[in-house]
Structure formats: structure tokens, C-alpha cells
Amino acid sequence: MLNEKKAYQTEVELVLIDELVPKDHLLRKIKKHIDFTFINDMCRDFYCEDNGRTAKNPSFKVRI
Image (cartoon, rainbow, N blue to C red; front, side, top):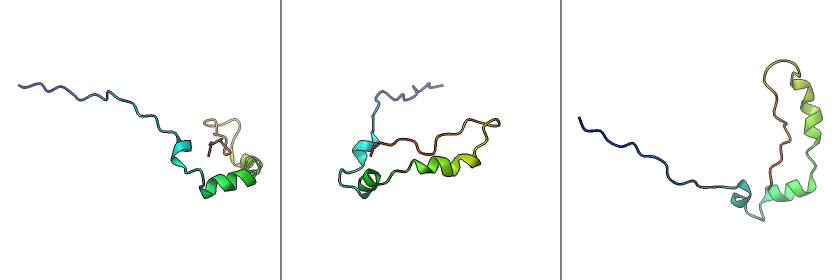
């Protein structure tokens, strides 16, 4: 029986979302002028504090 070697990944590629979004993209302009922190208060009642997995903050920071 012929044993073939399995292929292994030997390189890693680092991709940053900030580099994928063009500097003049509409989302960058929106983020600059609108404060979305109000989303935390709007969503707070939908998360249980003592049951289940810990909820992720809905207003996570994305550098765009």
C-alpha cells in the first residue's frame, strides 16, 4: 500500500478588514458622523444575564 503524505498549510496570511475597505467608502463616512452606542440600550432587554452563553456586545468596535 502506498502511503501519501498529507498536505500541510505552511503559510499564514493576515487580512485586516481595515485594509479591505477603501478609504473613501460610504461606511467610513457614516461611522464618522453617527454614534451607534444607542444600540446597546435598545438590545439590552433581549439578552439574559443569568442563563445561557455570555452575549457579545452588539456595538463591537470595527476599525473602518
